[in-house]
Amino acid sequence: MKFKYRAKNLSGKEETGEVDATSQELASGLLSKKQLFVIDIKPASKGVGLTIFRKKVPLKDKIIFTEQLAIMIRSGLNIVEALKSLAEETSSKELSRSLEKIINDVESGRSFSDALAKFPHIFDTVYVSIVASGEQSGKLDEVLIRLAGQMDKSYDLIAKVRGALIYPVIVFVALIGVGIFVLAFILPKLKNIFLDSGVQMPLITKIIMGMGDALVNYWYWFLIGLIILTAGIVLFGKTSSGRTTFDHLKLKIPVFGLLFKKAYMANFSRTFSSLSASGLPILNIFKVVKEGIDNSLYREEIEKMSKKVENGVLLSKVLKDSKLFPNMMSQLALVGEKSGQMDEVFNTLANFYERDVENMTKNLSALIEPIMMVFLGAGIGVLIVAVLQPIYGLVGAV
Image (cartoon, one colour):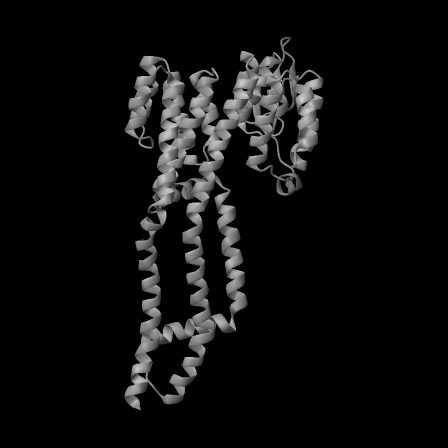
């Protein structure tokens, strides 16, 4: 993304302009490399058409690209030759177009990581930071192979979490569909029978019959209301308070809240391990890891942890004091601090939480079936009572 800045050069003259980077911290770093002292920096306004209609590159395509690039570099091809070959071979048109621009930047003298940073919708902060560490260490091929492995594990994790969400969503949609069908088509026919027979309908039956009439006669208002409600939720979710609210609720959902927490821990540990193995300082690791977690509560917590570490507090102590991170993580971090193998420790943690997520998704149907049965039973029970009570009255009248 682009950032607008005001800065002073070595002669003290003020300059303004825009810089491409995946985060404000990286943008400031790029300006510092150009010997500019930042006075003010903020995100530039985005074009509506660009953000709405820009095509995304599937994660699997990025994994394949990263693996092939690592192999080509290890085989002796220079970065430009490898990128040109991959730009022709990739099945993603968006990735191909972006690679052509990246090639031009690299050929004009820009570093590979800086060129990648101009396309944050494809290459996020974690990706760019790991590539930058590979360039600095001269082991770009090794870093890319490690990065591809991390992305592959993230792909599997995302697929498992999404798969776990499909079952309850299908059941919920089916329940709503059956309810609408009964209200709109079944109950109106029964209503005529009850009215013709003169049977006294109980209150619950009158309420449900009224709901059916409203749905049949004013369905378009229900549709408009649903559209407005959905748009309102989406717009609220884009605000800072909305994101915080939804992220908090996400962690409170029965069963799924725990699944999300474990997935965040797996993501945090895997990213921390990769960045640590790449040689990044711990404060830089925190900045990058924060961008890689899609939950505002965890991002705020990581920001607080980063400031404590900057003030000299040990990582193990910071993790122990956090309510969002389990004690096991702080205990193993202490082992990593003593052994000097922090990357191995967090790799072990990542493997543990990934297996935990896998086991939980496998057993998820057994965990949520009791909850789903309660909802289904309550819904069906109300309909049965509403329909059977007047039927019994009808039979008694006969």
